[in-house]
Image (cartoon, rainbow, N blue to C red; front, side):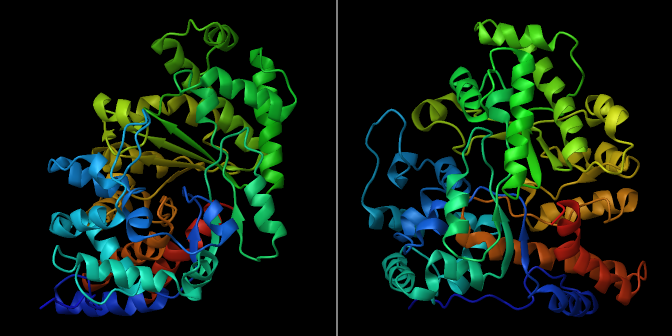
Length: 469
């Protein structure tokens, strides 16, 4: 007999009765607040077309590198999960077979954030009534298919049901933002905005960099054959993005290295000629972070830096499936020295907001919190990627609050491609923050009324403030 899928009302709270009671009260203050989603990767076509979501495998498995990363670690071929190969080789197309594999191996996710998100997503969003196992996989599959066919599970209905106040996407600088335009013109009143992510033209080693530069020239109407033209084109595209509601830029970098390069034009020309070295790219990327900070100070857009991820560590998976397929690994970063040029140049100006994310959690208390606890422009983004989890978020709060407080952090953002998982991710964050503040109240570090104000700021007000929403 299958076991029912249940979610305990006190999940993720401390087992100490006093702290659990306080956490429960704090969580009740924020559980129904609107969701602020200022950074993410949701495919907007699902909201534009507003068609029923596809089958469970297409919706929950194939796009989720968190999920198939774990399965691959146990020897399950990624091909068997239906993830398309860039070389055109065949992968599994039978969605029920894919879902059966997930059901048989769902035990692998016990105690992981993926398991926590998926359980809540299955129950609260998709109406599943039994635990997912090998034995129940087809029963669960059929329950999801039946529920996805209902009108209140269309993408826009979900958006409204999730109580999303604003949703931001990540968009390349040459993007015409036509999907955003069509959504606005459709008459739907939801606030969906772009973010400006220029990695594909700043990083010389980015796939098809030269073609990306050509598209930037075309989109901006400015010849990017020279470095000066390239800078003017980026400034013009930022103006265009801002006119479409954009409030933030986003920069994914290996390290947080910043420094002005006096020979930036020569580095750019070397790249144009196909002669740029890894060292040239490193220096140019650091220079462009300085330029992006300058532009943000001028146009008011919040600047996000995501540092400390070595992308595509496994060349076999990269060759078969391409970028962003789950084999990115955290590395150590040196924030003190790498960010010093940028912070010395721009960090003392409170008009600028630079939000720093790092996967190097050993850095939180040693460097990140002391830097954010001093420079007016610098704020800490939430625990990111591998640390976007119950324990990771707790560690983040415990390692940064004493030095930076919570008001030099920016609350939570879900940073997801999986649209139906958004409410479960925010719910986990709100529960963990309630748990952390309950500990401070129980130990008489703060008063209950202060904790009530702080939980509201973490869940809602801080992201609105720091992203100028």
